[in-house]
Image (cartoon, rainbow, N blue to C red; front, side):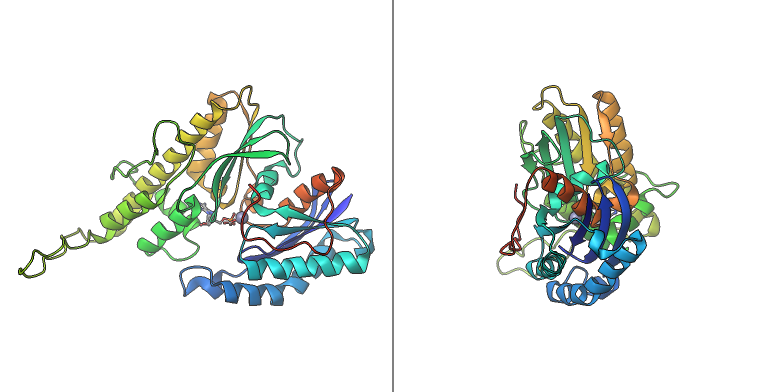
Length: 352
Ligand code: KG4
Ligand code: ZN
């Protein structure tokens, strides 16, 4: 079964052709980093316009790179949730137009769930039940997985996503965009000390499987840029802002490494807790942009070894947003009989 996947939920326009849900025949991603860089984050209107410009060339490239004719495509899979509504609509409209003109079925795919399929591309389908961990710019969620398609959410962030925390800390340290990979590289530099600062690891009580990254981000802000001045007493002059050491390159490196250690510690802590909720768990499945992080990758393999689990983590190209994961999970949904008609809508939130 040859499925064409379309992805446009945030700031990457992507198309991919996947055979039998496993073999990636092509995967094209057009990124928009430069367009959003000066604003320090993704601007929804700019993103939708760029998707409109990139969509047709990206689709053409995906078909050309796969070396197949359009009429060989058996179905279309499209990421229709969650994401920026204007961005999702561009991919969804392209997918509908293609499905209609080729006369093939179409299925909508949840982008967050698709991140967990990314590690299954080119591999055997793993054994279930599994613990699924999505760590991206928009999501930090744990799932019990009884199949590639059957997911039950166990926990999620109550404020910032882990990738968002990486990006915001990178901005505080003035590392530039995209922040996550730059912070990862800085923390890995020789001489960095990940114990230099004792940043908080959020626990949210003894039982919680949820995450919180906003306190950690604020702790980094105060360490790097200083605390705000204390409130002035009535009738007294304003108090000065407490002094803060200069943000030297060495200090930046240590803050980056210490932040990363605390952020990943919160992750491993909740994964350890979640594993207690899944009897006979066989596999640890990780996906999303932050699964490209060096420390995350080594800690995930340590945890899998410690708990006797198989580890599925995507190859680097499939960690961040791509359409191969959409086509892959879409194939499984189509094979299970799922179909969507042209009334399919774009939805800003995840299905679970
Ligand atoms: O999955 P993704 O492409 O988009 C969402 O669905 O959100 O994830 C993007 C996120 C960004 O926050 C980016 O900074 C982060 O993944 N990221 C990383 C690394 N590579 C990408 N974070 C830490 N270390 C990395 N090496
Ligand atoms: Zn994503």
